[in-house]
Amino acid sequence: MLFALQMNIWIVLVSLGGYQLFLQISRRKMEPFHEGSIKLWQHAIGIPALANLIVFMFDPYARGFEFISVAPQAMIVGAMIFNVAALMILSAHLSLGEFWSGDLGTRARHQLVESGLYRWIRHPLYTSFVLIPIGLFLMTGDWLVAVWTLAYVLAVAGRAWKEEEMLLGRLGQSYALYMQRTGRFLPRFRYAPALAVTD
Image (tube, rainbow, N blue to C red):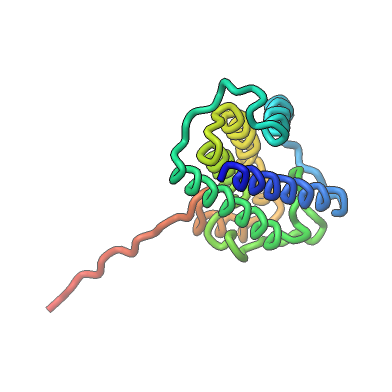
């Protein structure tokens, strides 16, 4: 079972990483938006997080001190969370199409995307990025990789407010209305008030 989970992790992470690298290289540059100090945090946390992940992928037991015992049922749940997150990432990329970029920026004819997961959530990519380390931890019991990955994810998700500032400036009222009807990382559930019953 552990070998199957390791192969699952390899296939998903290499596929997603390769796909995003391809998109980043092949897409035309956008008009950049200044991210501020959050970009420095991403690099400072991202490098050791990536190093830990690479060591883990090549030899999960190279360090050996950060594992905890995980029940087989939890491993299966972790695999489900991990793979759902991967599908969310792919879905978000397909919805964004040419408007996706690894760095904040907009295109000359930038448009509001409301298809797929973006119908309910403004930042489904960041939501899925949080699920990845949770799934990794449950699949492997390796809390060090999970903590580093989660720290990097939170640094990346910290730019959500900057991204919204950028899109408000670019798309104006249409994005402001979109913000009112969607959640930032989770769907926004609205309850209609009960209608008064009259005789």
